[in-house]
Amino acid sequence: MRVLQICPKPPVPSIDGGCLAMNAMTEGFVSNGAKVKILTASTSKHPLRLEQLDKAYLEKTSIEGIQIETEFDVRDAYISLFNGASYNISRFFAHHFAVVLENVLSRHHYDVIHLESLYATPYIETIRRHAPNALVSLRSHNHEYQIWEQRWKASRNPISRLALRHLSKSLERYEKDILNHIDALVAISELEAEGYKNWGYSGPLFIAGFGIDIQPEASPSRPVPNSDKSKLKLFHIGAMDWGPNKEGVDWFVEKVWPELYPKHPHIELHLAGKGMDSSWYSNHPKVFNHGEVPDAKVFSMQNDLLVVPLLRGAGVRVKIVEAMAQGIPVATTTLGSTGLGLEGHGCLLDTKPEGMAAALSELLDNPDRLHSMRTNSLEVVHARFDRHRIGKDVLEFYGNHV
Image (cartoon, rainbow, N blue to C red):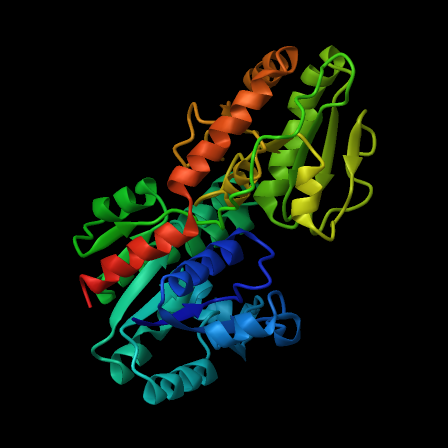
């Protein structure tokens, strides 16, 4: 099967959850014998750097990047405001990208055009004109409008609140309408799929969670920390220039940590991520700010338990699945676990600060539980998040509808 994967940002290097999710699908397709070409936007925030990619990846994906400008433009935003269009979406359409896409479609036949997220859908019209027989599928990472809805509801500035509300509503209208222009839908979780059904979508639908490369050597082999003798290291890593991450870590450090640390003075909290100011959290005991680290996996493996204190956002938290695949147990909020179905499977879940502090405190009082949580984590990941199996299932789904 020949698949053209259109991405609104490069899947590699995988610097955030969206990139990881796109690349996982690429690798899943390739490992199951599909012929894949990636056509991606390259932006100032997310540039494609071909010189950093290895030859094998370039050969198996024929990745091609087109530079487009997606930064906020006041004039374009006002135009969208008055014509009722979604500015969030229009930022990702560029005429020269459409021209390149047209050339790609004229050179090769593709069975499936796989659109990664809503932000790749502005090119459906071009696809229909130049590849009328291809299956056009939207791979939904989340309901995009919900992120903006949460932002305007949380805003206290009347002007910002009004502007964000407009962006949310116009994006919601677009997201509903686009369902009439696709042939198939691949949702990242049952929650997302149910939302589309409630909007009236009745076309081919498949649920394919976030996939990772399952390493056979992964095992819960690290020694279980002794609460009386060793330092148990909690940690968080994420892009701290993304509002929900910063808000969640603030909440944990200010609300949960003061409840937890005095009872367990042997513990530490280690924080890392892109956009983290060196002055943040310096006045909190045993909280260490590492800034942006060169290797997220190495950093994660140096610690014992991942904290994902998400209070707003949408979609699946990739970092949770990655941590569990490394045998690292996770503490998160109910929102943080959305779409993963991890209740009782290697995760501590609580949304109130006192509840999360109590759950962590109980775990710290019984450190042997960390071993069973690691075992459960690995079992769940192997059963549900293997990218090779997910790629195989999606290709079979496509094969039934091409």
